Length: 113
Image 1: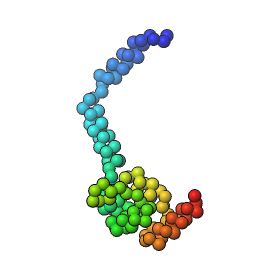
Image 2 (image 1 turned 90 degrees about the vertical axis):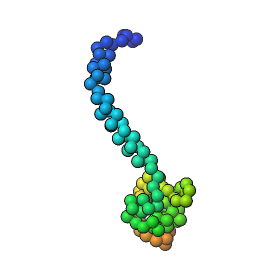
Image 3 (image 1 turned 135 degrees about the vertical axis):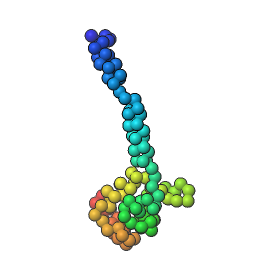
Image 4 (image 1 turned 180 degrees about the vertical axis):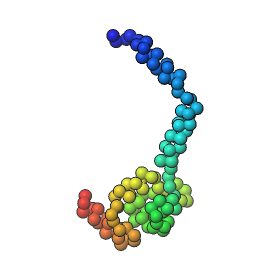
């Protein structure tokens, strides 16, 4: 019947709530917060280079060629992890080791579109 309180269901909820270890829940929540923050952290040119296994100069060249988009928030350029993942997916299988090869990769990408 609509509008009727199900006492047995309420009793189950109360029993479940009593069994929750609040300290463990708080620790799990703190870990989840760290994971979320790490996911949104912007990476420096050096961090992107380390992540991709290339030099900072290589990352700078990719940014200057326009295939990796960064944000300048002050002196250094930074890159979102989402942008890096998109860059890796888009150019997987291409040789983008220098400007000439980046140009070829871009031309091949445009032909696909």
